[in-house]
Length: 81
Image (cartoon, rainbow, N blue to C red; front, side):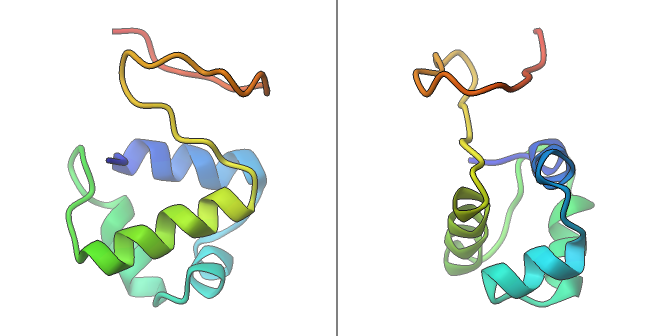
C-alpha cells in the first residue's frame, strides 16, 4: 500500500514532476493527480498501482510499510506516529 503523502514525498525526493512520473509509469497525468489527491491510502486499479510502484522503484524509491524496518541502508525519512 502507498499513501498519497508517500507518493508526493517520493516524487519530491527524486525530483520529478507529475508529468514525468506519468510517462515513466505509463499512466496519464490526471491519474497521477487523482492518486496524489487521495485521502490516505491510494485507491485505484491494481494494474495502475503496480505500474506506479514499479516506476518509483526504477527511480530508486523503496516504500517502507508502517512499522517495518528499512534494511536497504539508504537515506530517507519517515513520519513518527
